[in-house]
Image 1 (tube, rainbow, N blue to C red):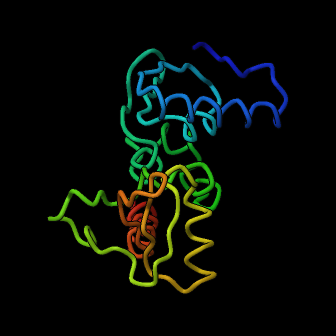
Image 2 (image 1 turned 60 degrees about the vertical axis):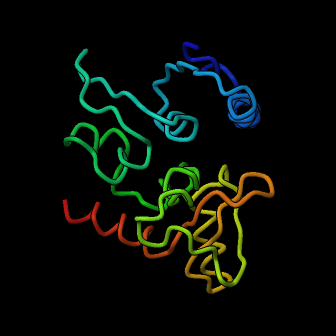
Image 3 (image 1 turned 90 degrees about the horizontal axis):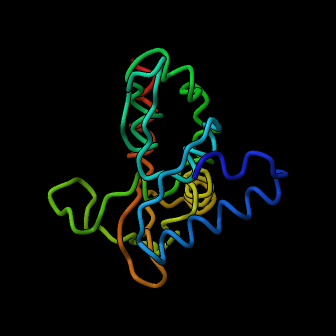
Length: 165
């Protein structure tokens, strides 16, 4: 898809983006999506390839691109200093710890206060839920099935690591 939402109003664009996410989740098909809209890429992608003057400068998850940009060009392109904006663009699944990865801190620790969030919700919604309820972690669900854990510490550490660079 080459800039499929380029000439669409903001409301329709968001609705169509949601539909693309839904279709991809249902069909499990790879979609190659070309966009110059960084926010759109961060919102829709599982992986992003960033080019600078025809050369690949970073290929990674949206979360890693935002928190660990490969160079100053990537940092400036994605606005790596604006964490609140970034949180609204990143899906929870990009930062969660998969329940299957039991060797990672927090993995398998289903939220004790039973706060849950959908894997397709964004990190800003997750942070708002954590702050509003006082929860230090959320159980990430896919439908009714728990699939991961998202902790406040992980989000905080990601922000801190970004600002050290």
